[in-house]
Image 1 (tube, rainbow over the protein chains, first blue to last red):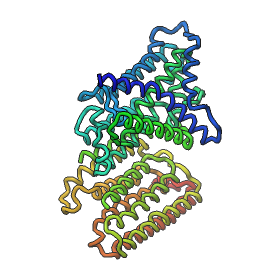
Image 2 (cartoon, chains in turn green, brown):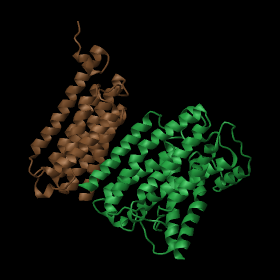
Image 3 (cartoon, one colour):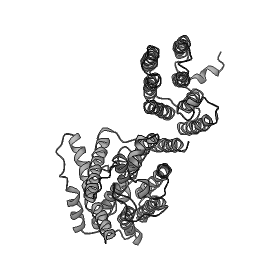
Image 4 (tube, each protein chain N blue to C red):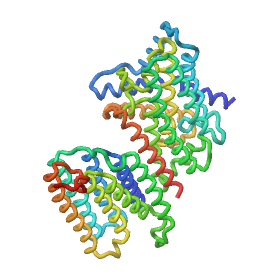
Length: 306
Length: 212
């Protein structure tokens, strides 16, 4: 019974709060630009509006076109079941679930790219190619970071990796590696969610788009699913960063959930600040930055292995 | 205090990576200035507040952190170059080589028969990694300014090694090292100016071509 209640709390947190983070990011950017900005709940209104709209599907597409948005929502929810939210343990944990976690996002990416290719548009093919290229460079970073955490925790499940030992680790000699891991995971968060400086979520200039270009043909409810899926993904990938930076165990469910939510809101503000003060990188520079970050994560591994 | 010195050494390694991967000369020089300033903290972190370590820190900060970077920034302003174009080895390969060298330095440092006190610390591996990064920068870039930056990083590696010996090493030796460096940069500055005047470029490749 308790297990069921925990799972329900976990999913409710994810499903209800995820769009709010997008609202916080937009609001932070607006404040930086000296505007009032959209209300914090605007993403919920957008989703509701899109869900009421008619869906236009090109005649050249097949079922693959609609599989993309479906996988885009289903995968982050599934992945969230393995990811502890702050001090709340994940509903499902087993040895080696970290690999499943990483490659679930690979599945989502496959379906998104397939649905982009299914439209037959050359723009969307280009976007798909870029998405896959950058994903290949981001994947080793995540794996290196998880190996570092696994080495520190001496365990192979995400709940154990992000367990209560982190507070002591920060003060110990492995604190330096944890710092590097946080930086690397933040870079991955920005790349995977197509954020500045890697991609601009607002741009509609086809030559520079990466993720946005792949969903150009989606409309109505499928577009709502794409947007909702992106919000869920931001929350699931942000959760380990929040846990690493705020390794507090309050002892009660409500306290842990509040600490986690507070951390997520701060993370969203941080993303807003990064987006406001940085310019978008030139496309050719992105692989260079990602390889540099891979080096950093590899270096963190060298530090914990010696 | 070991936490502070470990943090400093980590920053030094990050600056190495940055200098290897960056194509902007100004950013490169600023990074080396940061590295010099961070290195100035090291004698204080390892040997505590004494007149000897204060002098060492002050000298390092003034020369490595402020004076030499200022000279270099002035030099690139005068010869109007901003970027390193066409390095002999590309930016990503040098970054990879640098990372390999850093990992190698860590493995090698563990095999060295060191004094008990230095075993397992970050000093020796960081020093070796910095030496190699500087060397890599020195041999892989065409522009004379980047080569000077590489030389500076190389010297920073020697400085890190020297800090471990600061108790045993007489002051004069350290002063000598800093002076050598300063002379080196001055000579380089004059050479840069000459190359620039002769060929109206700072590409050292031009020097190896025979000319009527």
